[in-house]
Image 1 (tube, rainbow, N blue to C red):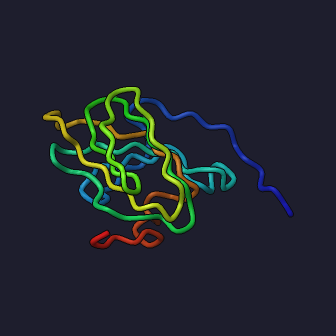
Image 2 (image 1 turned 180 degrees about the vertical axis):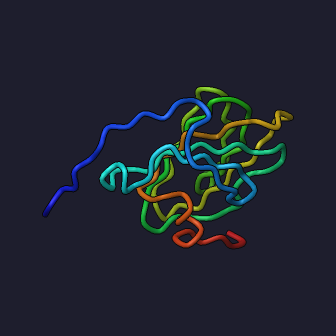
Length: 130
């Protein structure tokens, strides 16, 4: 197996490519291609009462670290309240959802680590009435 050559990189605050995904403002800091397939790193800024509906990823695990704000995180059958400094791990094939419970328009449920580019998650995730 050939391991691709990786280039060092640094992206400052506010840097990265920005997309809208499931109502969140997502800033991509690193894609899976840029990390040799190890992870994609991005943060998501969520409006009050906004967030990702119930869904699952078939091919990658997800880790979420909350920087600011308060989120209700449904992971499997359990719901947890996550505030600044809280962490959640979501194994692949596990139904999960995140909802901004605060009043802060700039609440941040990231960085999120997955094995894929967040733009591809809409194709590799199953959004349904889970």
